Image 1 (tube, rainbow, N blue to C red):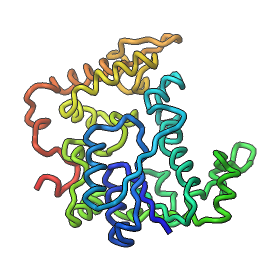
Image 2 (cartoon, rainbow, N blue to C red):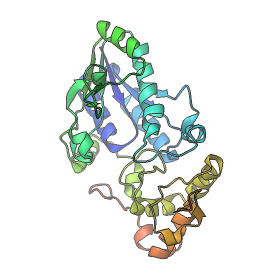
Image 3 (cartoon, helix red, strand yellow):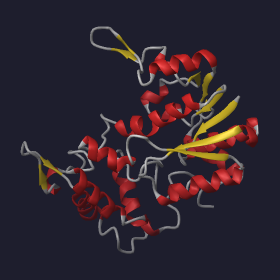
Length: 297
């Protein structure tokens, strides 16, 4: 049996990776990172250094159909949103499914998911199957018809006849602080972005990033503004949702005459709302801005 940890470079998956190594031994554990091409450079380095420190093999997966998030957005003619998170399915879920189906042995797949992260995650299980929703309905439609996952369904069914697809979420009942404490107790440090004001780590920036995080990231990596600006030009639409900032700060108008904001508008709003982000601000130039205790000591 192979133990496979889905590793994003975030605190929950890092704690899960450490837990797996402690539980099963580094020689039996693989770390699998699904690269969206939109991560912060700090995260890429953190993934490499932490897996090397643990002595765990790192496997990097990428979409075969899209060359990262920007290419996906260009071809979809829009960026992902809270209601249309196709970035997760296309750049993470599908590459992972393809990789699992390429393995010819029993797997124990470990995910760093916590119940308190969101309502949807609280409804998940600590122990289940990786391919659960190919056999158990995700939900029912308005007519009561059961809805299942369908991507490569025949291949999944055949694979599952031969191999185990057990899934375990070891930090499912942990708090965020317990996760941080576990990482520190095991001689590692969480992703450095947490000490710079990030509440979550993943795509940088993520369409779901809140304004306080965005403000902190402006201090840490101001060049992201131009990165997103160029992406908006290529895709032809705004990166952030229409209601992200007050309408009076929006400089763009869609075909229906509704105002929406460019990334420049968002940054200008943050500056006006809280002062110049790029001047010497005591709060936003502290050595540690973490939401979690223990990272500044």
